[in-house]
Amino acid sequence: MASGIELLHYVPSKIDAKGKFFVWDQDVAFAAFAMFLTGFYFGQAMLGGLLGLGIAYYYNKAKAGLHPDYILHLSYWIGNSPKFKELPESHNRHFYG
Image 1: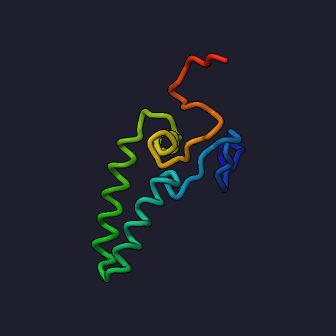
Image 2: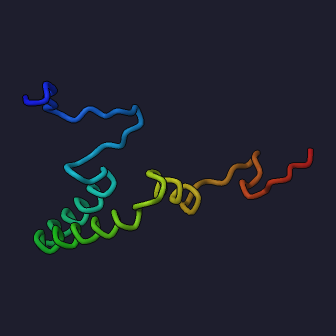
Image 3: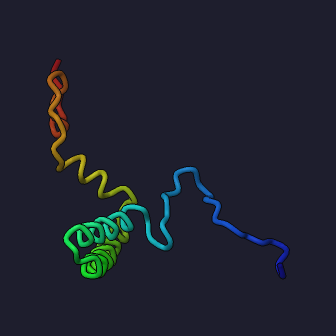
């Protein structure tokens, strides 16, 4: 307690702070854990864990410098989202009434 302030736990400074799992964001940790569970299911937990760490490392590098929710936005635009019956497509910029 040399500086007079002792921080025993992490307190986010913003309301919208993303969840962390050790040093990784939650989505990166989920990718690693999903690969570990897949490897565990097939009886190759060590291989799945190593593959999960590799995927998490490269996934973390790929999303560096992008918006924090880039993957969520990309999955919305490219994903299998349902088409609306009443509203026009989002790429249609000119609406004539």
